[in-house]
Image: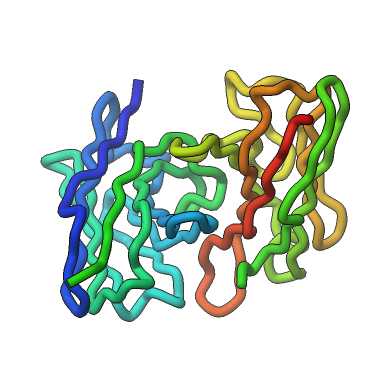
Amino acid sequence: QLQLQESGPGLVKPSETLSLTCTVSGGSISSSSYYWGWIRQPPGKGLEWIGSIYYSGSTYYNPSLKSRVTISVDTSKNQFSLKLSSVTAADTAVYYCARGWRIFGVGGLDYWGQGTLVTVSS
Amino acid sequence: QSALTQPASVSGSPGQSITISCTGTSSDVGGYNYVSWYQQHPGKAPKLMIYEVSNRPSGVSNRFSGSKSGNTASLTISGLQAEDEADYYCSSYTSSSTPHVVFGGGTKLTVL
């Protein structure tokens, strides 16, 4: 059974960089069929797609976040990562990693991590 | 403001059917068959219920069905059960600006 697990600091200071890692177990991140993405959800609000990556390193970003987002993949560790720079309180959210199919996951996100709350505060 | 418009809330009694709409434009819902629907219970991760407009993943009850007409996609739940009470989100591919994925604002389903 495929499992995804987010990890990283739960508290980040304003203007700093948020860094999260998603570890994939029970399957290979190098599968040619899937894309690996990040989605966030501010407390009490809806979902926002951040971006996704293919095992080859091709990336796709939400244009509203593109200038601050970097997603990378480490196939040797079966992990992919998210960096969001210059964070503000508006970036406080539960961050999910997920697996999707079709280009950058538009076919559907079928496996999700449990989510991790990141709070931006001094 | 979300790119896709959903009603904030819908309700129904056990056994009834309800439909949740998801309205976009010809750049997203109307232009492509890449609409997905997710169910989210409080404190849990979203769960894929429908993909590519009308397809159900393995293990999802056939009480859940999806369709699309023009720029509006719909999720129908028949034979409502108490466990269906949750938030529901639609998503779509969009070619607006740089191609990406957009979500609706979410709909709270209450089973009366």
